[in-house]
Length: 482
Image (tube, rainbow, N blue to C red; front, side):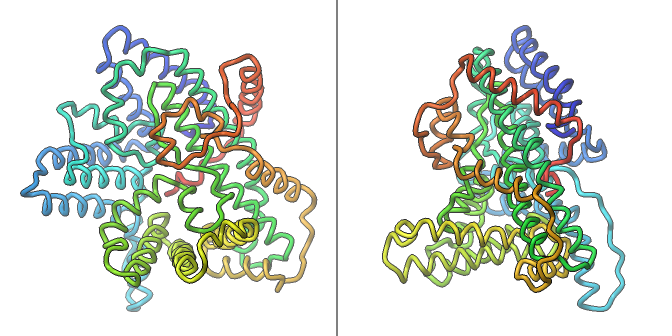
């Protein structure tokens, strides 16, 4: 059940919201949470009911481990819990990848398990690893109400593709009955944020997808891609993945707010970044913070010397690339970003302070160009396909056939939107909680943005109407595959 499908928009979401507030009012706060948990499990099971035992078993095991982790046994129990979570992820997501590489290296002909990838396993695995680590660090602790922890993991707005939510953020919210007291504010703000995200997905990302697919599908077929098609395809995908994923994150935040809950900000104008370090502070913020807090710090961070710090950066980005998918193209994508992060650190050390600030236009342009080129490895189905795309972008395959005005117009519109308009978190700056804004380093808007008035209401109603029409032909979110 995709957020942008009619069954979700017109049936599941409105019925769930209405029933939640009805149960909450008649039977109490905890009953409302239990209902929301059941609705979330229905949402997950809608995709493939076979994986219900997996997510339920994961919730039960991690909750039980967190209940018994103590200062004296936290080390081995934590290691066991992390290994258990990563083991399940490895079996379902990386078993085929491992067997293929063993066969390639040894000449064996081992059979690939061919296990289907459970929906959201990458996200709920990382979320629960963070929970166990935070419990061992005494940052958070499970309470005596298992349904609250279960809802923290399975809450359907963030379950499928994030943002990666921490227990220390959600646990206090689940206990605050007052969050459901102002229903009109929750619905008004939530629906407005949701509308912006839905527009990003169905009006922008889905309309950019054909231009990206035209180039990458040609490369996947082994056919040469000309300069025009290669660049329009790469730029279209750069814009598509941003509008698609940030649109999902906005929709998730909006849906959660309809129920009175605040999810983290996951994007903060990443294509305005002045260098790659800045880019990773703005792109998929909750994943970046997870990799920093639970992997980079565990490897030693910057506490064991400069060379070790640079090596840790590369290790983190290589593993971050592999997290996205079981293919070497993702690892190379992560490695390229790791190399760029190292280069930024070296420049900071060798050159005067404030270099990126003084030459911010050139720095931002170089960063955006690097991001476009590296997305080729992320999107390409193989190294051969990536090589064909890069050859085309370098002009080695000639100009090729002019793809027409469509991709150029779409790209110009997309670039104008991302570079001239504020990010969603800035538009709704006054409606998002301060702690969430500070965590994502969201700057205050230059002037007052969203207000609950007629002008905004009419504008969002028109936007929603356009989205509803477009939603009858839909596509899955890109990050649903991760």
